[in-house]
Image 1: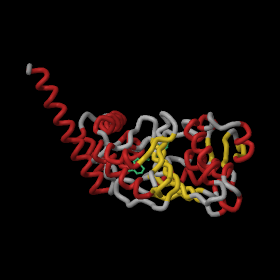
Image 2 (image 1 turned 180 degrees about the horizontal axis):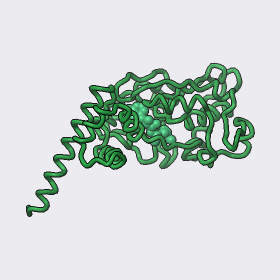
Image 3 (image 1 turned 135 degrees about the vertical axis):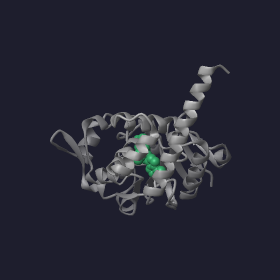
Image 4 (image 1 turned 180 degrees about the vertical axis):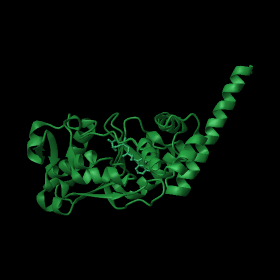
Length: 275
Ligand SMILES: C[S@@+](CC[C@H](N)C(=O)[O-])C[C@H]1O[C@@H](n2cnc3c(N)ncnc32)[C@H](O)[C@@H]1O
């Protein structure tokens, strides 16, 4: 090993140690447990906050948090990425529509979006249920939209969206389920009524239960493997036998659970829990 690569390694070790101190502090002071999140993406995000504050080390940043506690919220927003849109990956919703029409018509459905961001995915599911179940079944159906970030959930309850999150929404669906206000789209009450928002941290809190459908998309991409497995255990618990699970495009079913699920379609990352 030459001198410059050993200096680089030392710098990396120092950065890692700084990050670990920061993560322990977030847990102790705020109850946010980011310790099992991928270090590469955490480091990138923390560096953004360092840059925004003109700082050059995590140690200085930890001191800043002590001096200015409002920085905690800024860091939290930066670590929890809210990118989403209505009917994201439309082919997943098309496959689910077939399942709902052929197997669930007339049956009340319990669905859970467990990293729901500002509610786009949960409202998409509620629209799908409205289109596929009869009125009687719909009256007893619910979509539970949970996320670690209460501000995102508040935004979901307001249910007003910019046009750029609506690219996959057809004119007919817009007409039927949205009201246009000031260039934005507000979800109609009939759909809002189906969705129940609540804070739930998938790392620290227990799962919901008795679900026919679970959406957990674009959350595992931020977790290291052991955390993915621990959280998958909760999804598995939440889902009824025969229920349908949706993971994000870049996410995989943990190996030890693979035999308990069958893939629906090809490349959709939609799975059926074996009965
Ligand atoms: C990229 S968004 C995914 C939104 C939506 N599921 C989708 O695929 O379009 C990731 C969401 O995961 C949430 N999140 C991060 N860590 C979480 C945790 N431990 N428990 C619950 N939600 C979490 C973030 O707040 C963010 O809203």
